[in-house]
Image (cartoon, rainbow, N blue to C red; front, side):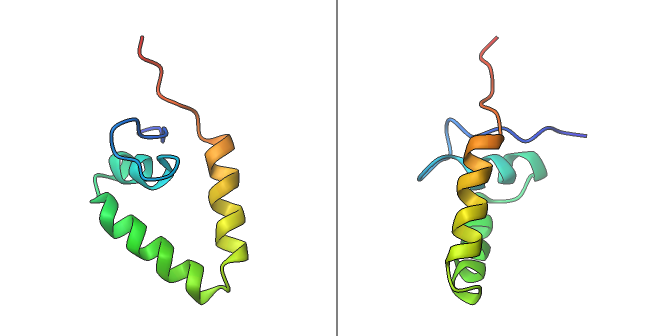
Length: 64
């Protein structure tokens, strides 16, 4: 099973969507579109809080 890391190369804000896309071999644009859709559908706050929590919980990939 692959681990999820924040993306260093494919990021717009924090690299959460890029990291999820890299881990599951899905285009990060699709992940971002789904995220925006869910954010609008859930009145922004729940998904925004989840994104920020993921930003702090998901580790950065070590270069070593």
